[in-house]
Length: 247
Image (cartoon, rainbow, N blue to C red; front, side, top):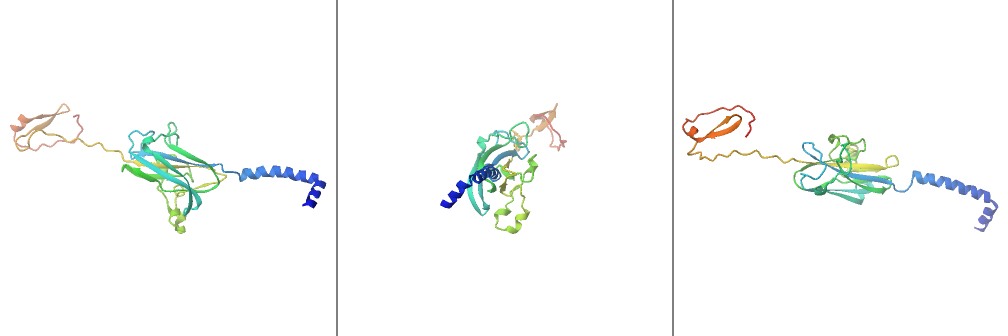
């Protein structure tokens, strides 16, 4: 150590040059392999089975959706990072995914993530039975432009069978990779609900079928009935053509 310090005093110029080089090299290294500055955003979109995208919680069925984001070398060895939970009654879109004019997705972001592999499980849905499907797109191969850009969960990475990993849909496989070229990723999960059907009104007849008869006819587009006329007539079969009428 004493000999080294003596050499350092004799070669001060060399030491100064080395310090300059270090000050130039270290920032460049830190920039390429620096601290965690990546992020993953998880978004919730909701649509009816008629393709109407929800922009608020109005008329939506009750429900809660949750998906967990984890990190690890593979789907069988994971550390949980965060569980994203969306309550339908509080659904409040804050991001535009498909629409260019109104917010159509509610999104949450986890940031300060390092480069590497991350995994999301198949979403858990609770609440109304009106929820019929859940589809995904983590936009590995392309962006989302329409409702047709969502896919069923492709769970080949999770089944302990490496032989089928190559056939998975990489846009919906539960796997997200952050790297220097793509440090910010967005996963969108689309839930579809069944639109309640309006029951067709049942006609009500106040007369007893055993003792009374009535005739129903159309007059100027209105349905009218005449019990006395019906009782004075013989039973007849009347064929009415199909059509739409004001009632």
